[in-house]
Length: 74
Image (cartoon, rainbow, N blue to C red):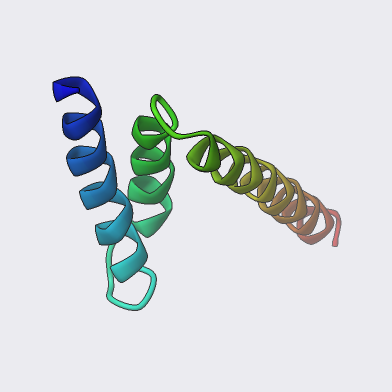
């Protein structure tokens, strides 16, 4: 029970801070997945959102790689 409370408090705080940093300047891209990873230790819904965000990060990185490659070719 103590572990679940600690996971909820720490993971929830990091996730909420990451969500706030989507609007405010800061490393939201770092805090959101870390918070979700911690929450996914106890909550299946957090694992779902973590996987979804990982897929989106992968797609974004691949898109950026393609853009940079095209720019180098010019």
